[in-house]
Length: 241
Length: 176
Ligand SMILES: [Zn+2]
Image (tube, rainbow over all chains, first blue to last red; front, side, top):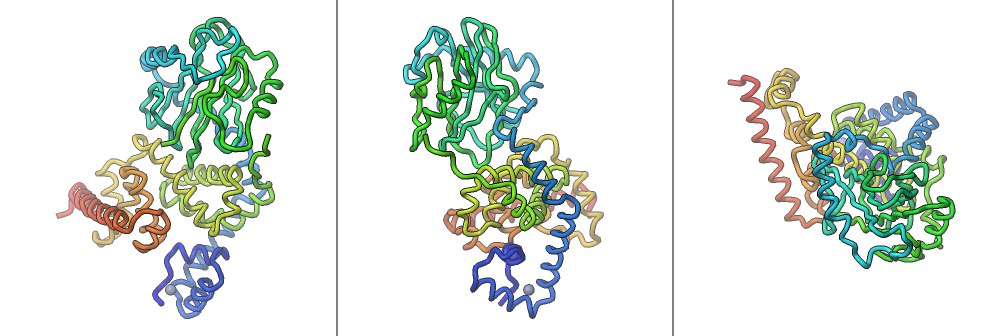
C-alpha cells in the first residue's frame, strides 16, 4: 500500500475513519516511519493548541461571536465614501417604489410609500441588489429603509429552515421619514442559505411582533412574499447563487 | 410552529474543538497563510458548527464536513481581502527563492496556495483537495460531486498556472 493521503491520515488521527479503512491505515503505519511521524506531529499540534487556547476559552470566544454572526455589525459599507452612497441612494430609489403586489400584505397606513432596498457589498463592489440578483457567503448586505413618516422599524432574516435572526440587535429602531440605512450590515453565512428578509414598519411592541413572526413560520418551506401575515410588513427573498 | 433544528450544546462544541480544532486551524493556516486570519476562520467554522449542528451530527465524516466549511470560510476571507493581502509578485519571489537553495524546490503546491485568491471558488476547492489533502482525481470528483473530466480540467489548469507563476517568480527574483 502506498502512503495514505494526508486527508486519510488526518481522519485516522481523530478516529474519523470507519473500521476497515482504519485497519488498513493502521497496518500501513506500523511499517511506515514517515506516516508515524506525521501522526505524531498532528498529536503534538493538538496538544499545543489546547494548551494555548483551552476548550472552555475557545467556546466562550465562539459563543460571543455566534451572538453576532448573521447580523454581524460590519462597518465596511459604512466606510464607503459619500459619493458612493449617493449613487446607491439613486439606485435604491428605483427599487424602492416598485411596489410589487406579491410583497407584503400591504395592510396598514405605514406601508404607503414604504420600501426596502438591499445593498450588496461583494469584494468592494457595492450596489443595490436587483430582484434577479443573488447573494453568496461573505457578501455584506445593508438594508435601506424608506418610509413616508417616522416610525419604529424592525427587521429579521428568516432562513429557509425557519431560523430567525434580528437585523437590528436591539429589536426595533426609530427611523425618520425618508431613506435610512439600518445600523450595521448582515454578512451572509457560508454555506449560503436562501433568506427571507422581513421588515415591519410602525412597530409598537417588538416582543409582540417577534412572537407573531415566530407563529407565522410554517412547518414546511418558508413561503415567499406572503408578508407573513404581519400587517405592515414587507418581505424580500434573498436567493443564493 | 415547528421548533428550529437542534443546535449543538456548549459541551458538544467543546468536545468537537478538543478533537478537531487543531486540524481545522492547520488547514485554515495553510489556506490563508496568516495566523490571525486562520484563528478568525477557525472561530467562524465553529460558529457554523454550532449553528448547523444537525448537519454535523449527520455527517458521515466529521473531518470532511469541517474541512468543507473551513474551505468556504477561508475562500470568503480570500475574496474579501484579496486586494489588501495579495503579496506583490516581486516580494513573493524574493521570499520564496531565498527560502531554499534549489529553485525547483518551489513546488506547485506552494505556488498554488500562495496565489489561491486568484482562482475562482471551484478551482480553489480542487486546489485544496489536491494539494492539501492529497486526494486523487476520483476522490476529488466524489468529494465535490463534479465529473472526473471537470476535475481533470481544473487540475490541468492549476498545473499550468503554477508553471507560469513559477516562471514569473523566478524572472522577478533575478534568476538567470
Ligand atoms: Zn506511509
